[in-house]
Image 1 (cartoon, rainbow, N blue to C red):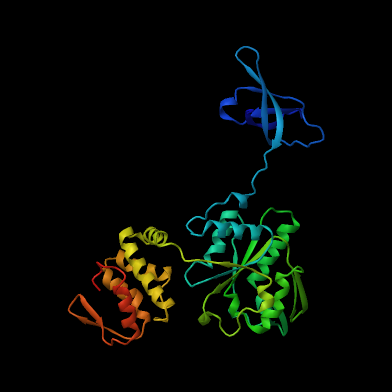
Image 2 (cartoon, one colour):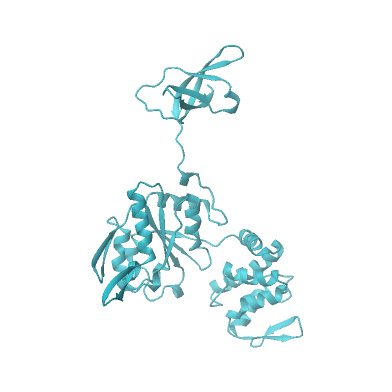
Length: 374
């Protein structure tokens, strides 16, 4: 089997093409290309895979390698080389899927339980890709399309249209595209399932092939055509309790690709908690185990609520500042449940009403960790 090596093209000041080996053990060897290809454009810095045809002695101790160009090495685009995100857990296939969709200009809807990082994921993606910092829009606050882009205000006896931060962000993207700047912009439409009906339909143009929307202002009708360097990611919580009064209609679903955001693994969650809060991993693991049992109870319909990773942090900070584990968990987790916990002495804490929601949560917590005295 022939030796396959790599060489890099380098033009000198006179524009004469030369080659140097990329392989470490061949860098002191001169390169001569046998039968240079005709009709193929070679640019400075191009890397080619070559077949070693012959070795020859050069002047003094110099060696010469005769090679045949085989194939140009295609550089991976930045998104193709991303295998993980800094401080954010996501399955490999999900990450690749998300990166492919964004690269192809497909808008994405992130769907998952609360606390899984749906809102922070776009920021992690943008940072990894080297894009501009995303702009987050709280969609549920927008009652009509005009609210997305600005508002009418009175001044000196007349009405003026005051542009929103979203509008300014779009204009930045327009300028960047016009000036040929190699950068991308990302808009996060938070809780898009809660969009008001009047806004919903008029937003569709932003996400289809026209990328255009028209809206009325105090100064007349205004039309915006989005540039190709701006992308959208929406977020949506799972479960009937998060559907609000509007939901996501079929037309809007058809304009987004769905991506389920999953709960991070237990070990990752506990390590992340320990690192962010500054507690021992063994302590973080106990907090996470309690939280996960409460989440299991919620999924089973026994509880109406369970703590996300954010809730784990509230407990972790108490523990960091000297509150004992039992008290920290009771203060951080149980305050959301109806009912009261009575205190009998310093360690024997029990719900006063065995049928209360806090009693169910308390029961789930006791099953979490065998050595936790609650």
